[in-house]
Image 1: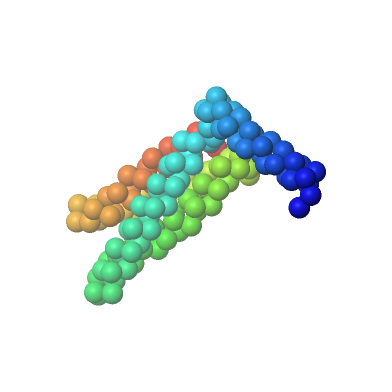
Image 2: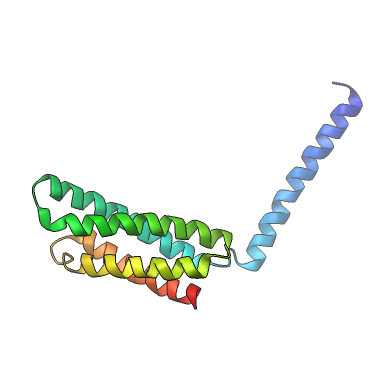
Length: 142
């Protein structure tokens, strides 16, 4: 590598490194993502729904057919909330409509999980996460 090429490469690297703290400062100054509460609620809801789904599948495998609707609604909410989280992070134009639809999915899942919350912690956790996500969805779809 010639001396001039080396200087250009090092200069470009220095500019890149210098830009990183500036970007981080910019993010910190503005307080993070615009839809952070919705992003967090959707991520939590999706995670809790995945745990609930896994629990329901274990019970279904043992012959407990009463968990089939709970498994179906928790699967649906996991998918919807994963998509919602991505759309919220992007501040997508379709976010208000998708948040409204996801709130409906969360309401159905919450209602089903409430039927089992006294017997199954996973269902209780999922119901609570659905309620919190539904509340954030209402803010985003207003």
